[in-house]
Amino acid sequence: MSDPLGFISRSHGAQTPPNGGISGASRPLEPGSPTFKDVLLENINQVNKLQQDATRAIEDLQTGKRNDVEGVLLATQKADTAFRMLVQLRNKVQQAADEIKQLRV
Image 1 (cartoon, rainbow, N blue to C red):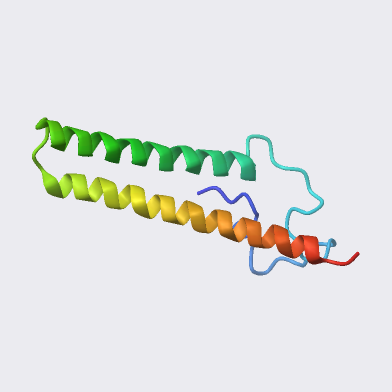
Image 2: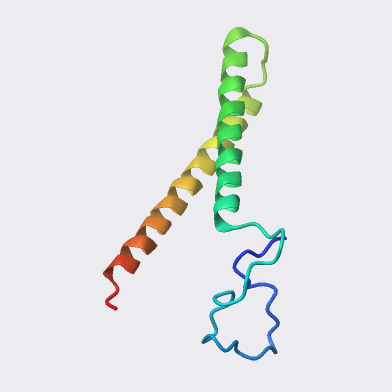
């Protein structure tokens, strides 16, 4: 399991880092570790694949290539749930960006 923010790998008995407890604020990324952008793009691609699979399942059901309605419903529910989670992630990122804009320096 990757931990791009450094929350899991930090042990409970560890001392607070000199940067005020913000993990990863002053240390460089480990070589080969994914960035937030990489993780986000990977998840967007997974949601896109789920939506394409659901569309293909619906088309196959309509053309008669497939007759399991349960499988089609499952594929569409997976795609819908994944898309809703992605939208919520976008909303949270936007909310965080708006909060950062409100900070006074």
